[in-house]
Amino acid sequence: MSVKKSRWLVSLTAVALAASACGGGGSGGTKDKSFSFAITEPEHLTPGNTNDGQGLNVDEALFDRLMALDPTGKPVPQEAESLTSTDQKVWTAKIKPGLTFHNGEPVTAQSYADAWNQAAYGPNGWGNNAYFATIDGYDDLNPSDEKAKPKADKLRGLKVVDDHTLQITLSKPFSQLPLVLSFAGTAPLPKAALSDLKGFEQKPIGNGPFMLDGAWEHNRQIKLKKFPGYKGPRPAHADGLTFKIYASRDAAYTDLQAGKVDFDSQIPAAKVPQAKRVLAKRFLSVPSGTMDFLEFPLYDKAFANPDLRKAISMAIDRQSIVDSVYNGAFKPVGSLLAPIVPGYRENACGEGCTYNPQAAKQLFDKAGGFNGTLHLMFSNADSTYEQWMTDIANQLKQNLGIKDIVFDKVQVSDYLTKLSDHKATGPYRSNWIMDYPSAEDYLTPRCTPPIRSGYDGAACLDLIKKGNAAGDPQQAQQYYQQAEDTVLKDMPLTPLWNWRDQAGYSNRVSNIDVDPYTMPLLRLDKVTVK
Image (cartoon, rainbow, N blue to C red; front, side, top):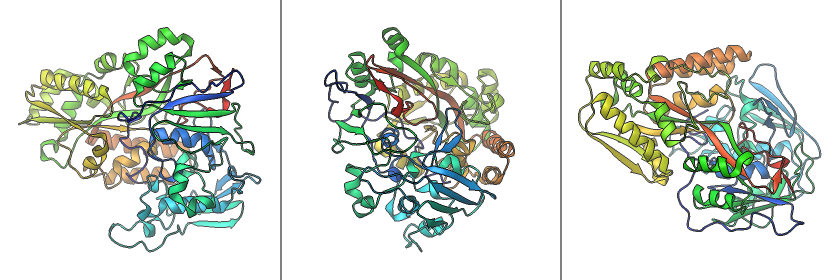
């Protein structure tokens, strides 16, 4: 995998949008068995190009893929009858017969090969390109020189044996492939998508339990209805589902209180105490795979000393911040992994992530201190970012004696580009949203060039490769833990806290099955409308 993958540093919230959401809660009368789900405006809906949380919520309803995750986070077949390998390098996917897209076209091995080739072809610039980096021939589609013409437009490692058999040959053994293929971005595409990708983006034809009802109404709603021809493993209970697009999380929560939307997976932290009172049993606090970090620009000589980075980490009182900013809902962590991920160790970081202002000051002085103005950088995507950066600034002033600290608040649309271009002005907020529950998913972006922090991850990457090639899950986990130890020792970033999803639902819906391993948090097919 590559550092380009999925939702790296992408917030679950969005900047304010131009239009407010429509009202109605999906209830047009007593016979209406549809429900509504609050989101902000997605970036994309084509699976291979969708890597923002909002678009993935919609794609979860529209698309099935070869694999899915069970309630324990383990990969299980969805459209696959089986996914097998004897060496972790050559895999065979057998696809269930009789499955169709919403337009009646059969789902075949070619449907998957076409979708993956489109996503993996570098010039297309699709957001989930790197999920296919382990497949043989990927480098020919993605030359290191961006100006060079690719040598091929199809992955050499994909072989359509017959309509229901896809052989996947990887460049190296990779034991985590079944988990990767549970990600919504690996869903298949019908032939109609290939002839008009722009049109498909506005009115995608999927293969999941819900199908589009109309077209994507930007900044307003995405209306779906039950797919009557669905033959997959998760038939919809409800007649329809409307994703209502809001300008802000606050606006969505206001509508949830008023019964104008049926499910909100992102109740603002400041509203949580009220939500607990108002919603009572309809308030949900669910473990999450999302993590926040403070990352250092190692290409800036001012942060080259690992002792300085460690001192800054030890000077941060994580618990006091989550108590004041997030009402204690988030969990301070000393790991690069979320607690729900296999291989998580509660304090893998040790003293480097333990609040100890006295020891932090001693280490800070030993490292030579910090001269000049310290810039703390974050995006304007969420007001809580500035709140906790303010707390960190005050703690660094008090505990380390850094006198001059300023904020660099960047437009969310420019934030990732600045980081990728190594234009961070100082330590910055970074974030990771779990794609699938594997330590590899969290560690590979930390160690695979190009790395936004400028960290030399060669030693870490070697351990990850050994974990990827291990046939035994326990052995793989040991290598991944060694890789995590390597990163935490070097501390190009320090873990801060693990999120919890604060959600709520209306009294119109029941059978609310929330799952921390699914992207929308809610298993959409199981929702029943009263």
